[in-house]
Image (cartoon, rainbow, N blue to C red):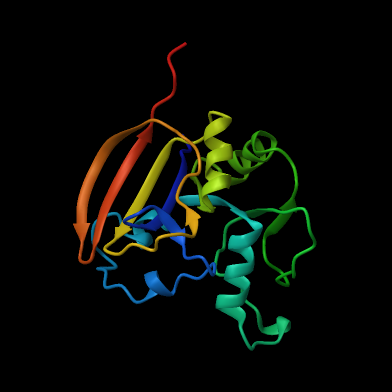
Amino acid sequence: MSLTRYYTATSLDGFIADPDATLDWLLTRDQDHGGVLNYGDFIAGVGAIAMGATTYRWVIDHEFSGKDPSEWTWPYDVPSWVFTRTAPPVVPGAPITFTADDVAAVHARMTQAAGGRDLWVVGGGDLAGQFADAGLLDEVIVYIAPLTLGAGAPLMPRRIELRLEELGRNREFACARYAVVRPAG
């Protein structure tokens, strides 16, 4: 059975990006790529991806800066949905669907495309919150960096109840996996 997971990193004070929408604070951190809750093991189980327009544009800017669009290679080999209301740059040949549809409708398509593998809500926090609001988010997996940003894009800009399932340390990071607790009824 597919799980819908929000896998991300955050500052200690709960921001996934700084006020300038950059991740420089994160990309210099030391981690064991084979350690606790590592990305390699996580992505191996992912069959479909959802991300917001801001995250998509960050990937475009970060991965393809200075390259001709004909040289762009999408970093994910699974079907990806980008939630946007504008026409972003297109990565030639990438399995990307741009959508302004409700998360519930897209979730059904993602689940079918994933073929039993997990769904990854890459970012950001508001998109993950929309999946949670619709009762579709199963887990939050978070790497907590040892710094505070003071402001920026919040990890989760709404209240959701979570239950700690796994806790560990990956070099500089505290790592936690939480199950989303759904209201009884």
